[in-house]
Length: 141
Picture 1: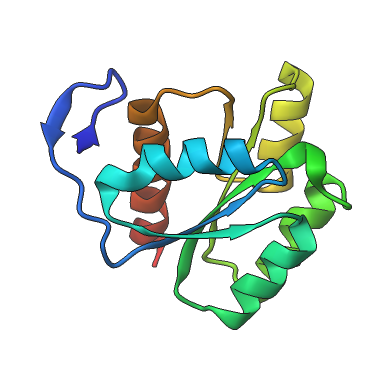
Picture 2 (picture 1 turned 90 degrees about the vertical axis):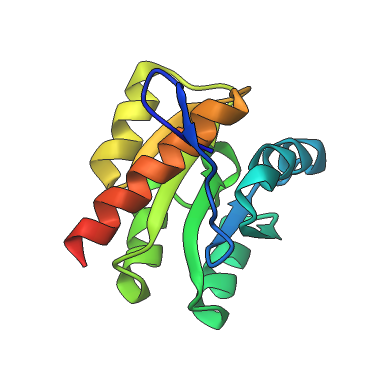
């Protein structure tokens, strides 16, 4: 489904040609995000840590979006984004966490993440956030 910022249903989303990498060390959190993205038909991949996510992006150039839990990373937000951007400047990177302050969210956006969301998240809101980031990225290409 494609949604506006107010989450009004417009039409179904077909991201069959998209690949989303979820980087989260907590399997139940990964499963929740995976389930929320099922209606999009996107291919979902999983990595448990930031470096594993970077390796997967190097190996699979078809990954369009990385949803990364910021509290598990071995690197700071800025270092992490820089690692992804070195070889994939067009990659959509969206941070997420259950334990975040406004300051942390701002640091992630300043580091170059395309967006950020707090967990838990409504599945419709998640799809909107990803869709808007993809649309913005596609306009730049």
